[in-house]
Length: 315
Length: 315
Image (cartoon, rainbow over all chains, first blue to last red):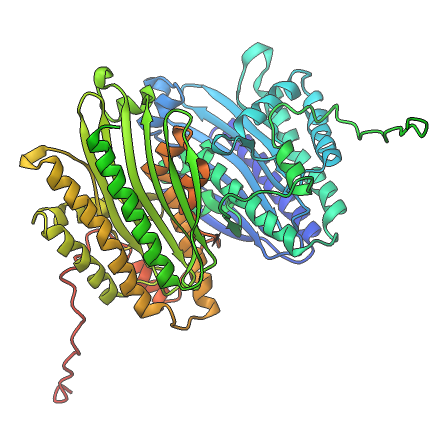
C-alpha cells in the first residue's frame, strides 16, 4: 500500500473502532462480534455485527480495504480507461436496525477509491429511514448534516442533500426510502479542492454519525411502543429490503463482483413483512409518514407549525 | 383482440378460476379476494390474493391481458425489430407461501406474447421451493412434470428441467432457489411445432399445478412442526426474496415497465428473516437441504437408498 492508501485506510479503521465502542455504550447490552475476511483477488476486511441488543436489533459496521484487477464491466461502468491499472478501495459502511419502531434505521458510508494511474475519489453519505417520520427530528437530523457540510463548503449540503433525495428513491413505490440526508460520489480535485480537503470532509462526515445516533437514542431508547407499531416497522423494513436489493449500487457492485455476501447483505433487516396492498388509516401517523416520503422537502427550513389562532369571534 | 388473443386469454382466465376454486377447497378456511385493475397503456388484469388460511399463509393467483406500445429498452432486450408493432401479452402467475414449513413454496406461470407483425411465443413453468428438501418428494414432483412434458414431446422435460436449474439460481449464495422444475420461454413455431401444439402444452402445464399441490397438501397440511422449523422457514423465505428482487426477469420487467407493484410483488412472502452468517448444524435436516440446493440433480431417477447390507462376518 502507498502512504496515502495507508493513511486513509488507517483513519477509516480508527473510525470503525470508535464508532463500535460508542454504539456498544449506547446499546448497553450487546457487543460487536468481528469476522475478519480476505478477498481472493487482494485485500480484505473486518465485518462487525451487533445483534439482539437493548437498542440495536441487528446492525453492522464494516471496514474493508481491497485491491486488484477491476472487472471489465465495472471499468466501463466507471468510465475508466483501459490503462487505469489496478484499483484500491477502502471504506466504512454502517447500517443499524433498531429494536424500537420509534428509532430510525440509519445508514452511513464513507469510501475512498484509487487507480494505479493516479485517478482517485471519495464518496459516501449519511441517510435516515425513520419508521415514523417526526418532522422536528428530520429537521434536527438535516441540521446536523448541514453543519458538517458547511464547515467544508457552503455548496456541499444543498448539492449532496439533493443527491440523496434522488439516490434513495424507490421508483416502483413512488416513495423515498426515508428522509434522505447527504450522498456524494467521485469527490476528487475538481474546482480547486485537493486530496486533503476532501479527506477531511469525509472523515468529518464519519464523525457526525455518532452524535446523530446519540441524539435519537436519547429521545427514543426507553420510549414505549405498541404491537401495531411493530407491524408497521416490519412493513417499512420490507421497503428497505426492496431498495437495497433492487436499486442500491453498492449492493449490486458487491454481488456482481463476488464480494462477501454476508458482509454485503448485513444491511438487510432481521425480519421484514409484506402485506398485500396495505393501506394506512387516514390521518394516522403511518399515513403522515407516507405523505412525507417525498423528494425535495426542505427539512432545514422546517419549523413546527405555530398554534392556529382560533378567532373566538368568528362564528 | 384477435380471435387467437381471445382464445388464449379466455382459456387462461378459466384456468385461474378453476385453480382458485381448487385452492380454496384445499385450504378450507381462507377465500381469495380479487382486485381488478386496468393498465393506463392498455388492458388490465385480475389479481386474486388469499391470506391467513389454514394451508396458505399468503398467496396470489394473477391473471392479466395487456397490450400497447413496448418501451424501446424492452424491444431491444427481446431482439424485436422496430416494425414489430404493438404487443399483446396474457398470462397466469401463481405463488403460494404455505403456513407450514413442511409444505413447499410453489410457483407456476404460463404466458403468451404476440406482436402486431405476427411474432408469437409461449413461456412458463412450474418450480418448487421446499423449506426442507425431502428427496422422495422431489422425485414425485419431477415425475409429475416429466409426465406432463412427455405427453407433448420427449425432449421437453430434459430441456426445460435444465432451463429451470439455470434460471432459478441465486448466484451470490451459490445455491438454487429450490429443487427447480421446468422453465421455458419463446416456444413458437420452431422445429415443426405449431400454435395449437404449443398452446395445448402450456395449458397442460397449467392443469398440472393443482394435482401437484394436492399431493403435498395431503402429506403435510396437518403435520406438526416446531418453532425451530418456523425460524428456518423465515430464513428460506429471505432467499426467496433475494432471488425475486435481484434475479427474476418477470419481476424486473414488471417494475421497469411501471407495472402494478402490488400484483408484481405478491410473490414476496408474508415475512422473512435475515440472520447474519447463519450456519446449519452438521447432519441436520437444514444442512441436508442446503446440500441439495444444487443444479443438475436427476430427481426423476432418484431412488430411496436401499438398506446397506451390513455383512456380519466382516470383522
